Amino acid sequence: MVHRRLLYDDNEGVGEPLNETAFGTGLVVRGKHFLILEPPENSALIHRVGAQQLFMNPIATYALPQNSYADYESLYRQTWSALSDSMPLNVHLLTFDQLGPKQFLIRIEHYFELNEDEIYSQPVQIYLQDLFKSLGTITDLIELTLGANLPLSQLHRLDWMTNNNESSHVETTQQTHLKDTMVMLNPMQIKTFQVTL
Image (cartoon, rainbow, N blue to C red; front, top):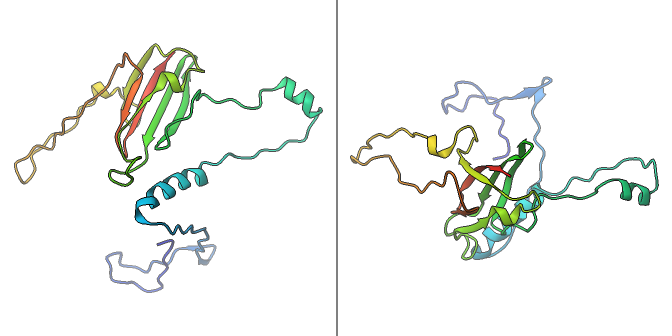
């Protein structure tokens, strides 16, 4: 549902009409819909990769030249990427922030669901040192919580018993201080790291 507007209460619990207005008139929603007609076995690959290309496309910027292009090109670096190698197709770099002179916050995600694609729904290994070797040698790698506010080793989750007398605690393998920069990502998993060079 893109947007819904009701002038009368629909008796669904809100107790009032869903009549959102702006400047005295009802809200208008405009957007684009993209339709993919593919067999189910191909659709996940096409829509997941297509969404990345559609929403993460480069932003074109323009400026009035003060010098000739040749002079500008010799004075300024026009392209740079922290990535020295391309990432696997099913992995996306969500965050790359500089925390300090030699410290970075890196958040990566495996954006395919389990059993969604025969090839790309598998766990994937990536080597952060190989991907980010343009930055230098990684000397320390600490896995953080998703919000990057706490090392994963210091996270203490609540534990309770369910109606079936089962524990809510799930055993997970946690990489905290990593000696090796190899990271394993499972489908739909996001991991956050503090990288020190």
